[in-house]
Length: 155
Image (cartoon, rainbow, N blue to C red):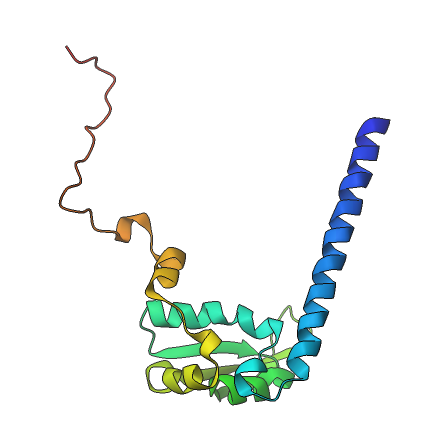
């Protein structure tokens, strides 16, 4: 019992050390980004997480990019992703803060976003690896399917 407790404490200490290192790296990146004046370098760590949504819009050929956004973040979505508010912020049951709905015409606006923020671009390979399912892939002409397994022995 005592040994299990000690190993658990070492694990927690390791996790705390890793979390501290990650926080330090994020803070250093934020300071670096804040000191920059170029639009493509203003991206904060949080913005990079939104790249996945942009990749999904491109992969699935979305007509609109939708975002549920808190009022204090709407200016960011307007400035960076050219979103427009389509539903004013309101309280949502179960949540403490109001949220609004914003949208952008993805086919019409994505190139403007890519010009200002090249980091938002992605390759077809990236999108395929994230969103394609094995059933979406077409078998190649030289692919030979294995016979269905059976319980009956072959003779």
